[in-house]
Image (tube, rainbow, N blue to C red; front, side):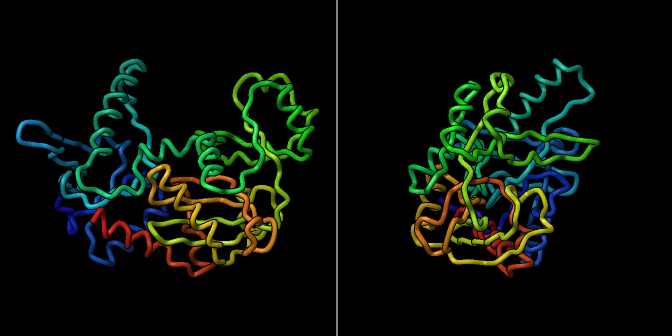
Amino acid sequence: MTFPTDGPVAVVTNLQDPTADLVIAELHDRDVPVVRFDAGDFPATLSCTARIGGSAQEWEGSVRTPTRLAGLGAIRSLYYRRPAAFAFPHLDPQDARVAAAQARYGLGGVLVSLPRCLYVNHPNRIGDAEYKPSGLAAAAACGFQVPSTLLTNEPDAARQFIKAHGRVIHKPISMPTYLVDGIAQTVPVTEVAAEEIGDSVAGTMHLFQQRIDKIADVRITVIGDRVFAVRIDCDLLDWRVDYSTHTYTAIPVPEHVEHALFAYLGHFGLVFGAFDFALTGPERAADSWVWIECNPSGQWAWMEPPTGLPMTAALADLLQRGAA
């Protein structure tokens, strides 16, 4: 099989994505052609034609933007970030749902079955890995320490779990975009007491987890075969709440943790992952690393300037090589 090594890198994301901007700039500096588009722009400013069958044993055709044209068989790698949802505001709600379904399974189906393409990451594998229960089960099977965790919609089960473990946190299982005055909000992790559990817990699924007595947090970004670990020192339960309080330090990763990282990525078929850990003791100690989660589309670029870790270059290396 021949792999394209001089074709474009496709970057699928929305226009307000500074992380993708950095990677695209790096690829441009290397004279690597890039086709950037937002799947949510279909069909207004994005079009696609794809053919298979007869003499065509794989998808042939192209995707077209106002300024770029990419042959499906020529795309060497596809960097799937954060595209907007399909929208058809000119149609009534029922017709819009039908049109969005055709776009998702039509255009989306073509983009997930490109013939000789490296996916970073494959959209379907991202979907699999975004299920927190699947991630927790895989992490435990791969050898990570995993906090005691309860998923339930039964208030009594939640109260009993909290009484058994003492300090317990509650966090979203999944969080769609939540806007306040047009600004996307982060729903923080919060500590919860048994007496705070009300009957409303019965209304949907909730995730409760034993609170880890940590001395620091660690974000590990795995890009292909390269591992970048950053220790995050702050006094917050959820470090995402206020980035101004952080101190960042590049640190080594113990061998057993690195082995488990690649086992986890292999389980889901990923080549990129942003892992979060709670550090409970010395960095080199085997029992100091407690797995919290892995985001298959996680952010990393803000840690590069304070640490000097070459993560943008590593991601550009991976996309430039492609499946070959």
